[in-house]
Image 1 (cartoon, rainbow, N blue to C red):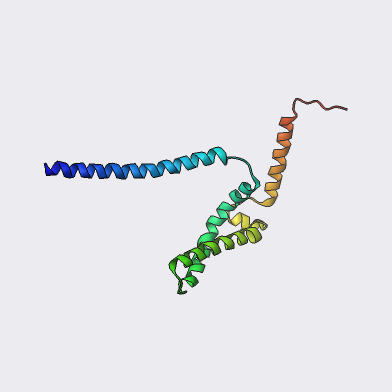
Image 2: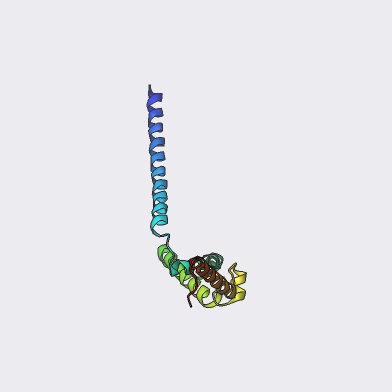
Length: 142
């Protein structure tokens, strides 16, 4: 009889663990769903951030390692060191990207981005094509 009680307790623990973990996953899926529904719009900030993702990915580790090398030696709390590294890394990443990478075509190429010139040409082609599609049934008036 004692074996069945232990088995029942283990089964209950497994079910509770499964319920807790699946609840977390459903929260993640619902947040993604709401984001897709309400945040799926064109915005100049999203365009800028989307372009900056890849250079951030490349640059952040180098910045973190260099910063952490010096911050570890300071006798502050771990939490303050963590927040300092996170904030300073973000700010340095933004500055390096905005002031050095974004305007420089060579650095753009090395970090996997398209050149500024090609980007402007693509934008002009898209606007020309969209104008042609938009006004294809309209005859010119003289």
